[in-house]
Amino acid sequence: MQMMLLRRPSSSWAGRWIEMCPFPGRRMLQLLSRDDMEAIHLAAIQLLEEKGVIVKNEEAFRVLKEAGCDVDEARKVARIPEHLVKECLSKAPSVIRLYSRDGKHDVIVGKDNVIFNPGSTALYILDRKTGEIREPTTKDFVEFVRLTDALEYIQAQSTAMIPADVDKRITDLYRLYIVLKNSTKPIITGAFTKEGLHDMVKMLEIVAGARAGDKPMAIFDVCPSAPLMWSDITCQNLVDCAKYKIPAEIVSMPQIGATGPITLAGSIAQLNAEELSAIVISQLVNPGAPIIYGGSPTTFDMRYATPRLGAIETIMLCCAYAQMSKFYGLPSHAYLGLSDSKALDAQAGLESTMGIILGAMAGVNVISGPGMLVSESCQSFEKLVIDNEVCGMALRLVEGIEVNADTLAIDVMRKVCPGGHYLAEKHTREWLRKEVFMPSPVIDRLSLDGWRRAGAKDIIARARERVDEILATHEPEPLPPDVEEGLREVLRTVMERYGIKEAPIL
Image (cartoon, rainbow, N blue to C red; front, side, top):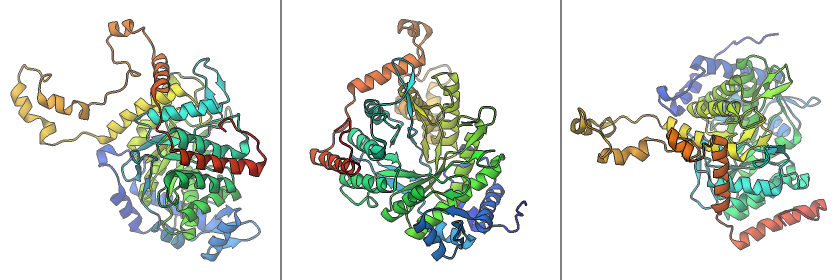
């Protein structure tokens, strides 16, 4: 039976959206009108009130029950009322400060900031020597982290792949150790077990020299199971993030036509309901706990039974739900800048560029995905270097065109016009680097003759050279010896817990 939209939400929802809108109208990509967003909000509220959400975690279920939710004990379903959603939304922060190891790469998540990081948890890499897709090793991951540390437009790290040469019981902690050791940038990560999150927090506190919630250096992904279900482990991670007051990034993942409605609006409404359920749980556990409205929705190609992360509809879903995050005044996240292609080809370029540019224009605060191929399954060193350039262009795009007396350049035009040139003007020197994005040599700007003299290399060859150059010359800032030993001790303790005798880095 189709649910009827019987009431409209308070106008305060729309008011908060206008207040939080990060870009002037001409610079903001908006796929949804205000009425659209209100309708999506109302549909999500009706889902939560009438159908509810399955919560398999006892602590979260108890918290919802004690807050007055109508619960079905046998099915572990909690129906969440609108007033509770509104109350919890009012407590969630709109801006999150994420700290870096050296204090030079701190980022603000929220407002109009766009932060890029590689996609996470890849099972494969594209071997840059053979071109084969294979499982990654610890050596691959260390090199990927060092590469990311050097790229100027990739502002944050991720635990980007799963090394195949490590016992899976310690993978989450092991990956975090590698990132903390080889980069100073903030991190987007996630725990695979309940215990894993606590072990990872210990490492973060050793490096920060402070409680994790006082100086958060990492965002933890938490993923509901579409449609409208929280597993025990993931929900406990959400609860514990709230207790520590470390940022939790909700990653809702409906596949339209499979685990979400075939219509984009319907899947956005379902995703929105999952996001709101996470916000309610988080704020009930610890009011003011930082939380990010994120996701990785996809279309589903029923011809091949495969998710399509590079599809235009996937990008539309992400841009639209980012609007919903602004509607609520929350920071946003999306998986964009990746491709379904299995090779570094034109498809990889077009899908990744569409996602990066449109996501930035939509005001997505955290964009995860640069470097990825095969949907979310494979990392490529060369692609990350190419995507870094696209990210730089996207950041330039969202800066927009500044119009003032100096940029209108009337005085210099009076001096030069008619018939002169601007090459020797002080105004040109002052504004060149500020106004014009200068890519690295990965992007070809040579003349035809110059390109031929340089070896007539395509972008993949140039990217490969850039990767090799960075790995040969870039040395990340080392950890203080006592801090590194503290991290290794945490790792050794966890290995002893599981009876693991060795790991490649110990």
